[in-house]
Length: 432
Length: 152
Image 1 (cartoon, helix red, strand yellow):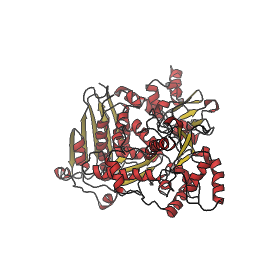
Image 2 (image 1 turned 180 degrees about the vertical axis):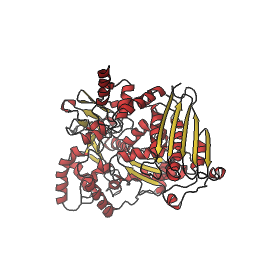
Image 3 (image 1 turned 30 degrees about the vertical axis):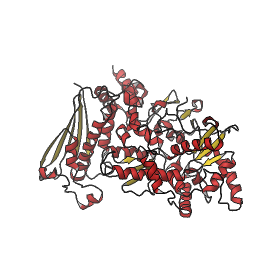
Image 4 (image 1 turned 90 degrees about the vertical axis):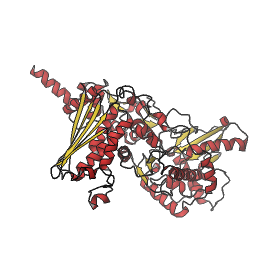
């Protein structure tokens, strides 16, 4: 079964239902002792692949990446990559990636700074007149955007309509390479090395059937072993702070910091900021935003992975160690601003930062929202629930009793799939 | 006529579970395809009402009824009651203690928020006897069946 974000190789599946219970959108069931994935409801968070004991579930992000020698290959580095190598200068990490055969390596720090400038401007310009709904929600984590589209569509308009840094940079790099090497767009292959299992990059607002500005995505865990060797070699070399790659930028610690929960908002010159990471925490936070609890806040950074992107499923080292590495990098390299505000302001005024697609275009994107239950069906679910054991054992194949009741009412499961209902029905038959 | 009823007990000063009734109502309304903008209004009212019952009330009861044409939220408690309802409706008026204010409550926006968001708000209260807040929301005909394409 191949979904948009995850692939299930069910021949190895034992039907343990760990993934069923881990899925935040209840997109997985067990049927005939095998996991059944409903890609329609998948938001690509990767919780399932974190818990699968058999390795049945794999992210569609690539783990093999033969480079095409006829193309100009550029790798955009997720800031989380720096967190994987303790005591290593960010520019040495970039050098190591280049050693793997990429023609160019691209660091994001300047674009992060640009994005953060745009956030500050947007808050300042819209807070007083409330032209945009507050609190604004960070557009960075693609899984959050999908979670909102699926479960909290009222909040789609709260998503900040600014392009994500990696999207801005992919467009920039492609144009720049074309004029630099006098080649066409199709002769360029842009890679993204990422901790994120959900094929994070796409043109604008990250919902699934948009065309990507990045050609291929590779998991950090796939490049880590080879990268470690190159990093070791570079550590043995003399100090070299000059790099010849125009995209490498001599990064400071703004990138590494970005990959840690809070790293997007901490450098912002604005008030009313909040950072939340981890799936359960985020679900809770979104519910509170919907109930108006955070109406006084300006901007909320949400990252589905625990501790931020450095806790992504496709990372290689322990996330607490990665966090420590980031803290050390921040202490050594700082997160100073390096771009002149008047130039950024000019870009902002020109509309360069803004996304073309409004997230509200994705209302009713997911099928279950289109198939609303009737009031009678809802009452039927409540009635059935009163008979169910309420222990959420998942033996029936659904993650919890409420979902099972909904499946029965929607005709996707049989009453008799529940052991308690079977007992009740059998004893009734026995009496008659 | 189809009607969906659900009730919850609200435990006094239980801040760990505070808000769960409102969340559960919110999820239920989403599943039956109520328009998102209306859900948001109901959710804000439910949460304000639930928090009032948690903070000030004893033995709180939280009931919701969904009919084809309206939603009714009925939240009652056996707390201290509201001395002066007119005064309580004023923006910024609050009887919340210092402790609650430190927790971020007590901005005096609870009842005004409910009044803004509900189509109709009725408060019955007597000092020392408790409070009952009933909020009504009308469901425009056809708002449930065909929501595709409508934006909030």
